[in-house]
Length: 171
Image (cartoon, rainbow, N blue to C red; front, top):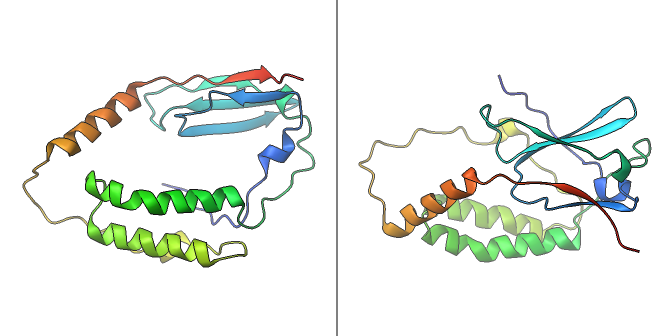
């Protein structure tokens, strides 16, 4: 049974990491967990949240010197605003590659426009307020070559194993 919790704020992990170390090659990771046990902090990660894929683990204790004084991410940062702008520009491309239908495109446009108008912390609706998933009508699938190319590319990406390294910063 899934566990759902409404998140109203996040810890600012960048501010926690004031040490001489940084995480490198942290890309293509879709599932990760930071865990503190005693005086040790570990990062468990894997590319996808699949039971068949084992976790890989990295000791990041030296990279996070002080877990006792976390700060909370407040408001919408300029970086987040640029991400919203980039996503808005990519919507038509996603539509053309078959990633979603017109109704999804309309929903995402309206959703992203609310972020560009908002200046304070976003008020995200509870998951229980989202519309229920509806099973699509049965159709005979026909895929264009650009869609099969996207599926093949995604499949190859799923097979790739990522590696994260803890690297000492240059002074």
